[in-house]
Image (cartoon, rainbow, N blue to C red; front, side, top):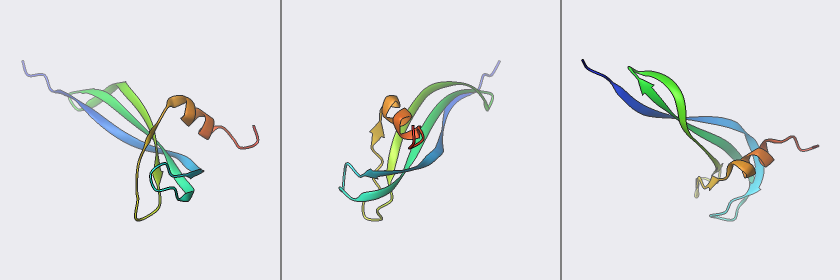
Length: 82
């Protein structure tokens, strides 16, 4: 019997946030991203294994993508008025 399994990571764009880049120091809009890695069996994604958050700098010279904690991401996802 042949069993085909593996892992696949998909990146989801959550929203635009106004931050200062930790790498280049440029201020402005950055993308808040969520990377979800799922276990796949016979090319069917079954359940998530790992979830990571990152912000992506939109400065063309930088394009850094530092990782952030889930708590930081939750704070950035909350509406500005709350």
